[in-house]
Length: 424
Image 1 (cartoon, rainbow, N blue to C red):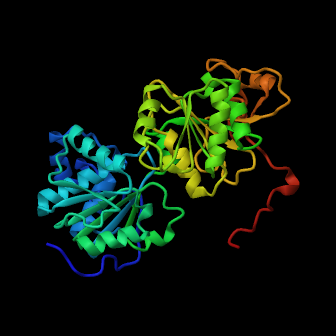
Image 2: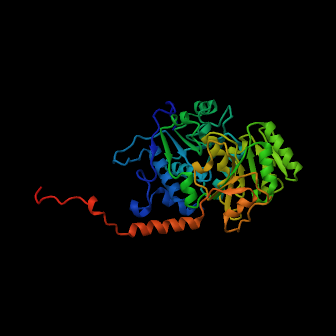
Image 3: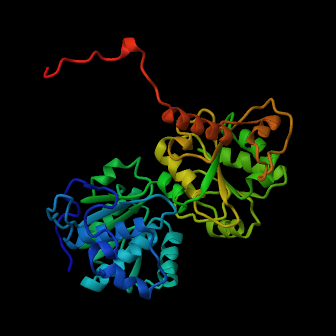
C-alpha cells in the first residue's frame, strides 16, 4: 500500500475552525460516524475542537472532505495539525491513526526527536484504550527505520524541515504523513511540505474555555541569572516548581550556582545530562528549579509546574517556552510567567493574563501578596505594581456605559434636519 510518488505536492490549505468536512455533532450529521462508534470502547472523551480536528484530518486523508462551497477536495497525502501545547495532540494523532487503521488496515509509525515522546505515546495509547496496533515507534535519527509503515505520524513537526525527516520519508515511502506541532511560527517553510494545515482553537480560546490554565504575568527589570535569582529567592514558595530558560550554558550554570547557594535545589538540563533522572527528581519535588537552553521546549509534561522564567526571544520560541506551564493541575489553579521588561513578546500579547505585575525595585517588603489577598493594589507596598485594572472600576464603567445607552438625547433645534417638502 506504499506510494513511491513525491511526499508533498500541494500548497498548504488552512482549514477554518469547525465548519466544513466531517465536523459537527451527531445531531448535526444525522447519524453516528466512525469516531462516534470508536469512542465507547476507549477512555477518551474528546473536547469539541479535538473531535473537529480528528474528523477533518480523516476526511482530508481519506478523500472525503467537502469544502464550505460543497465542492469535494482532492485527497491529501499529508496533513499538519497545528494546536497549542496541552491541547491533546497525542490523543488526536492516536484517534486518527486508529480510525485509518480500522478502515484501511495501515501499519502506523510514530516518529519523534526524543525518546521520552515515543514512550509517552505508547503509554497513552494503552492508558486511553485507543488500541493502535501495531504502533511502531521510530527515532528521527534511525538510519534503518522499520519497513512497511504506511501512516507516518511526526510528533513535534516543527523539525519536519530538517534533513532527518527527508531521510525518513525516503526510507519509508509512507502512503500518508500526519504532522503534529504546537509552534509553527518559526518554520513557515515547513508548512509548504504539507498538503493541508489544520488549526482550530488557539491558546487564548483554550484558556478561556478552561482547557488550559489561566496565568499571571510578571515583568522583572532584566532576564539575567542575577535578575532571575533575585526574583526567585525573594519568595521561593510564591514561584514554586519552576523552569528557567537561557541562551547559554554559562548563564544556566550561573543561575544554578546562585539558587543552590540560596538553598534552592536546582539542576541544569543539557543535551549531555541524564535528563530522565533529572526529570524524575523534578517530578518528585526533590528538585525545585530546572534551568536549560531550549532543551525543555518539547516533550516535557509537568502539569504541576507553577512558573516559567522565559528569556527574551521571538514569538515562536516564546510560545514554546511559556507553553510548558499551561497544563492544568488542581493544586495549581493559576500559573505564572516571568519575563523581562524589554522582551518584544510579552505573553499577554499572545494570550491575555489574569493579572499583570511590574517589579519596581524601590519597594521595601520582601514577600509578595498572599494568594487570598483581595486587593492587588497592596502589591505596590512590596515592589510589585499591578498593571491590571481594579475590577470595581470595570463594574462602575460598565454601569456608566449602560446608563448612557439608556438616556434619551434630544438634539438642539439648530442641529435638527429641516423638514423636506412632501414628495421631494
